[in-house]
Amino acid sequence: MVKESWTLYQPFNMKEHQYSILVEWTGNNGKGTSHYKQYSRDHVISATGKQAPIMGASDPLFLGDPTRYNPEELLVSSLSACHMLWYLHLCTTHKVIVTAYVDSAVGVMQETADGSGKFKEVTLYPCVTVESGGMIEKAKKLHHDANKMCFIANSCNFKIRHEPKIVVK
Image 1 (cartoon, rainbow, N blue to C red):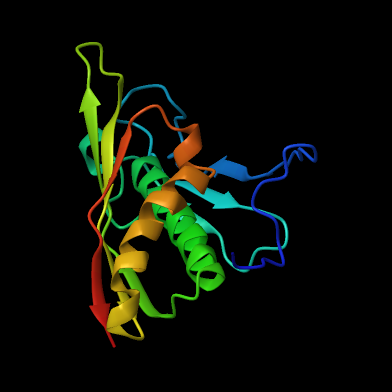
Image 2: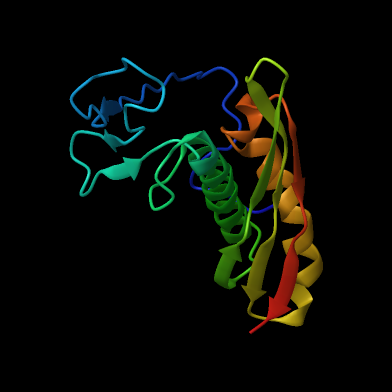
């Protein structure tokens, strides 16, 4: 058993965390929301103490600026980043030395007849480089464990798949 400096399971020490974000609509073109095509979907996402804001808009299919991040992309990126951070932690505690990690995550959203919708699934495609061939099997298994630990994945009601590729440095 690997001794960890940070305990993964703390059943008697439940903690709550609060995250505060400011989302400001910047798309009033002078007439507010007087008509569906009269306003921009541009907005800025920021938080106290962060270096730079995130420039957001809706998906271009919904009249958004294609050069800005949309909420759907941010959800997929949150899943990918949370998984990666847990994965790297688990690799550390299980003596798997990762030297590079890149994920090309893809989310599938399905619209309904009334215009609403929901995510159907997200697939993570991490390409992980490890230090030696003897680490490959453990490196693959730890993706399953990282999914179990990921705060964002645990908050979703759709399937999250993993198609990892493990390579040696």
